[in-house]
Length: 435
Ligand code: GUN
Ligand code: ZN
Image 1 (spheres, rainbow, N blue to C red):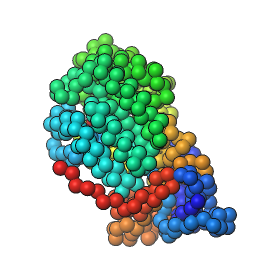
Image 2 (cartoon, rainbow, N blue to C red):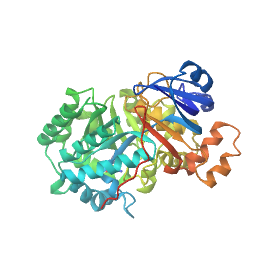
Image 3 (tube, protein in one colour):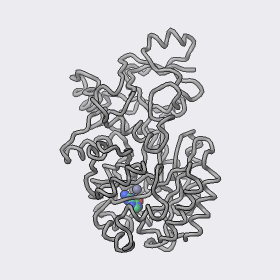
Image 4 (cartoon, protein in one colour):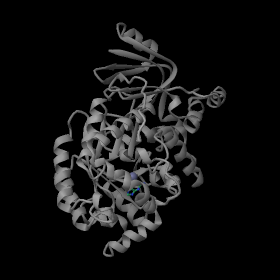
């Protein structure tokens, strides 16, 4: 049993549904009691110290204790090519992404990359990731093994492609089904791992492959399904030329069994009214990846409009189309995209999206993403004065939102004072160099 002391911020509702500043309870001298990997109480430090007198105390001073960040859409194999210059989506995939992903058939290479990736995200305060792996089963084994070595709750799956990709990155409808099924059976529910059925996106799969993965998902509705939807306008034109019978991009997935509750639709920027209605009707989740959308030049996600109509929305880095591993930087980009669309997101809304919002989008909202009794003790402690520039601004703050906003906008891994996974503090991580 241990007691973590610091400021605490715990949400009791979605801040988009009412006054955002009242959606969370702030304790300036708070405490989180943790036992056997779970949160057993959250409250004022004085109360919990009296209640748990014999607990080990870890005092974070003025540090802000939050749930660990939940990154709902990443490509861990793209870690090595993050920040690659000058291309839009299709050229970016062909020039940078596919050559790097081709290396993941080598189990040692995959293992090294997965290890480096998890060290990086933990040092940025992220405790759960939902990742595309590559076509190679080795890349999936590497991802789940390295996560298990850190006891992290993670989600991921083999990325399937049977056309419009290089020869060494293509499977078939049958091998995609067989290998995905074998990996699902090997990893789903083992420790804290969950398998995600993963067709990359419509243009790199034939209808047969999409249908085979739709069938696999129907056999395993307990799993999530992830893919990409309407990220760039050129992509949409390309896709619609390939599937002339479809009403729109979403309809391709819908017809082939790849739309429903538990479907994670990455990007979802350029949507028609019909697509929006259908996404909401089935309860699919939209995953907003703002640093990617600006970096690759994809467009401006309509957060306010989509939330107002009741869509489920998570937040993500989209490493390495996204330009940062940091969910702080990702919240900042979501704020900037909101500004460009005329609706600044409140710090409360941004923090919600990076924690409980993403957790709900991946159907894990009852076990991660909140500072509340019974939840898994994946936590981040933020230093709200991690650089001189942030510190001089937060000193003037008149409430917790004004105190945390400079860290959201200007913070990075230096703001992460500690990361806890299932109640255990991760030691300060040395990220190994890659090549
Ligand atoms: N669409 C299909 N694959 C990808 C990918 O790897 N990154 C991004 N940003 N979009 C995609
Ligand atoms: Zn992606």
